[in-house]
Image (cartoon, rainbow, N blue to C red):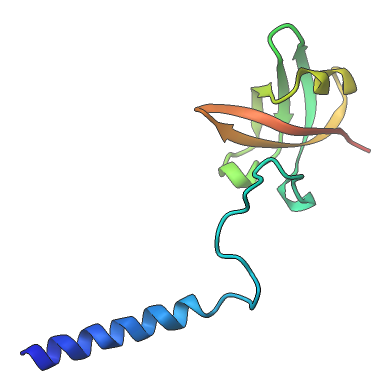
Length: 115
């Protein structure tokens, strides 16, 4: 019985080792330290500004799917990381933005006027 158990453990260890080695050489398996780094184009979501509340630091955006949050298209109010972002857009503007969940809130960390 002990030999069967030992064989099973060794087989599992080999599988875990093989899976761990499938990452590209030099690629980090740890999350990047700077989660505030610039989002890639694939991480950005397109939307249209519906309302801006500079006093509260919030923006309402009618947006497409937010893939990193697995959120379907809808209109939603978000907090902004920096209130100065709100000075770069107006109601009705097309935008590209990145939103993250931070402390239970959805926060726009990047906001760019669209083309």
